[in-house]
Length: 116
Length: 115
Image (tube, rainbow over all chains, first blue to last red; front, side, top):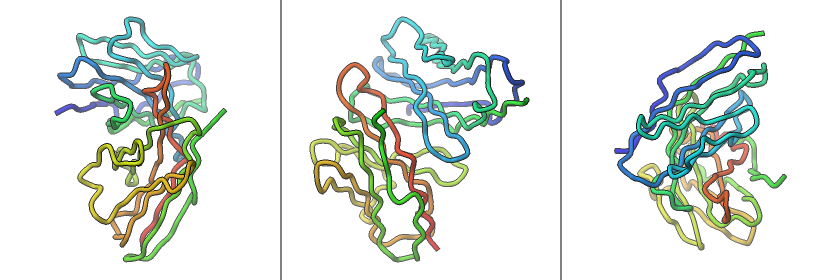
């Protein structure tokens, strides 16, 4: 069965340092999409970044980049120059096969704490 | 920037009562979803909806749940007879068409408390 694994339940990082949040996935499908969402303490789910399985380049959105290693089935989120406002829960998620009406399956999340 | 909206932000109801959670997806989106997140746990898929019918539903989405798109803008989730274990944050999401059409945009959620 397809699944998403986030092995870091919590992380503490000094402000301005780069952060890598780990995510591995398991699927036999060739066509799939990988997502990262941020959930601050207020509860909303904020879309950060998307990577398609056929995309050859790693996705980037501002300070966020997705380190996609297809052979290792990993999709780590990298946040450059972390800020206090980055403190939140971060969820890795996957959609397979890559049809528009298909659901997203979420990992259990990593709680990131940015220290001043 | 267009966004998904949800009302109410918080609903408290008694066990056995019916609740309707409302969502207004992004206006040109065609695919709609409901997810829920029990406090402290991961987000779980409930149902997807396209072209006025359910595309897929999870085992959580039993006969007590229903969805409807009553007009061109609203998308609702109804729980007929709430149970204590229905207490959770409920998220609506939508997806459009075009180059970024695999991205699902979530609303701010409705926190449902069943007492």
